[in-house]
Length: 632
Image 1 (cartoon, rainbow, N blue to C red):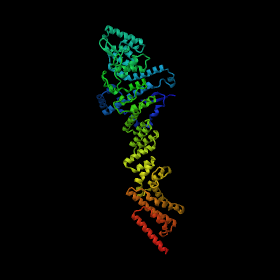
Image 2 (image 1 turned 120 degrees about the vertical axis):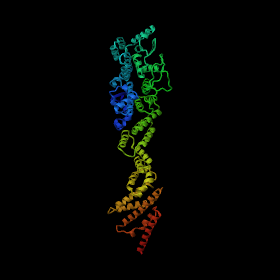
Image 3 (image 1 turned 30 degrees about the vertical axis):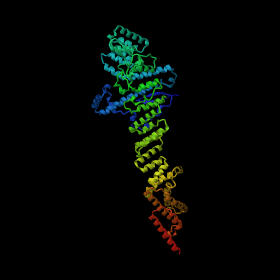
Image 4 (image 1 turned 90 degrees about the vertical axis):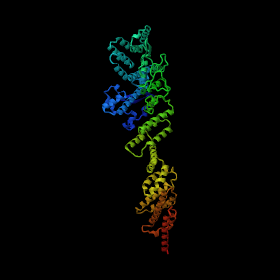
């Protein structure tokens, strides 16, 4: 079953016919975008001052001076008004592009069932009607302007303008109103059979043969040539070019409506127009090239040629509709839309639509350029989380993952704010980005900022057990031991001690495991001291302490701080060993009752500095002498 891709556009909906899944799955909803403020770049930046200009004629908005005059009248910043007008014009052009896509590939008829039973001929005619309606809508604004400029006494120019917009009824009424009834009668037959065109062409030929056409105004001859289906007519005095003052879309329109039979297709009209502006037809080069809108004001001479011409995006879409193998690279070039070479907004979204319509012959490097360029554009506007969404469309898995991780590493903040939390929720819940990638990016940023604590935390949350362990041992563990901040270190070490984690950690038994056992011994002794009967716990604690005595010397010591921490641990373990032996002898035990045979071998293995060692040796010697005196 076919699916219908629907795109919202200025209050309406465009439905695109597709055999693929709904293309709207590739576009985030407003909730996915994270709010209206994040959609500003995607929708184009417009200014609220546009609403204040509703009562002004559109012709008054052209030019810098007019904009400046309006801005000063309304008390608006002229630069803001210029930007608003430019954004409005760009959005209007985007609307033209999307409605053209609807006309060329949209659903034909009110339902899928009705569209499927149409024959190829019927589908071609329906597509011609929809394209014709698009041309008529697009020309309406310029037609109205030209009619207003024609004014009274120049109704022939106004009639011609109406014809170029396919508004034949209005052209007939205007001719009748001006008393030009014969012209009105001819206009009423403009969309008739080819026979009427042939008769009018014979009339033109007779006038030329008798040289009576020199008594007719060129404006009227231009209408007769148009109705006769002659784009160029050589009169007695001049060359009448129907397309001389028309933009390229109306040139295509007059070829479709007046110079081709009613059964001609969109591709036929485009081929005739292409021959007209390239000069490959019998009449030569008589139509303007399909330049982008920002170049139309600087229309080049018809005789000039360019090594690499720039054509309007709408023209490229028509070429693609006529030829499925037409190159997509030039179609998706930003210069086909705007003079800003790095503005890939429309190009990227259009590529998504074309993919849904099974146009996939864009090379992998060009696809990568398209995704990377649009992502960079969003990134420069502060929408880096939306740039991640764009990068997720890179087809190749390895390149996609690398690009997303690099973007996260550049922009994931360490400081949590309401905005950062919202964006991270968008990444993880809507885009399904693994949280591990986000914490990895934050660990990288913390390393760059020199924040060891944040780096360790995010390495741990990113499940990089070995890197987290190495960072703890080299930079954090010694400070925690010296400052008795055991709880902070214990949170990390207990998580790393899980069998599935510590199995991947290098030197766990001689580093992190030693610190963990040391902190556990201290906490166990504190708990035992609160108990009344702890014989079994004392036996187990004694075993743990004696094991710890032989492992403290295995701790890696790279700095003086590490050696100090190791010495503090050795000193405290010696005291703990004495306390355990004392508790085993009973509450009334004194130093004489502690068995030196159980104490001395373990004390001697502890890596203590000379002063600590001499102090311990002195204590052991005094205890031994007292025990010797008592025994005698």
